[in-house]
Image (cartoon, rainbow, N blue to C red; front, side, top):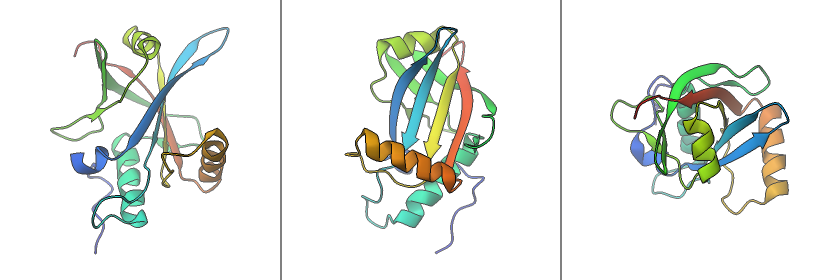
Length: 158
C-alpha cells in the first residue's frame, strides 16, 4: 500500500479520530492558549500504527507545524471561535477539525486575540494515559523528532 502525499491533508474520517485537549499556560506577563493534539492509535478497520502515524504527519504538514526542538512557527489564523464552538482549519478544502469541550476561559482568551500554541504528537497515545505517561510520551516524541508545534490565533470573523 502506498502512502498519500504529505502535501494532502488527511480526510475528515481520520481527523474525527484525533484527540485534542485545550489548556492555558499562565505567566505573570501573559497567557498562552494551548491545543494538544494526539491520536489514540488504531481503532478502525484497516487502520494500523503506520497509517495513524502517516495521518498525524500529514496533519502536521497541512498545519505547517515545525519541529518541537525549534522555535514554533507562526502558522496564521487557523482557529475559529463562535460562542462555545471552536474549530481548527487544517487545510482541507471542505472540513475543519472541531475542538471538543474547550473551557470558557480558553474560548475567551483565544476569542480576544491571544496566541495559541499547537503541540501535535505523531506517535499514538492511549486515551487513558495519565499525566506521567503523557509527559514521558511527549518527552520521548520530542527526542525522536516526532513532536511538532506552531503558533496560531483566531480569525476575526467566523
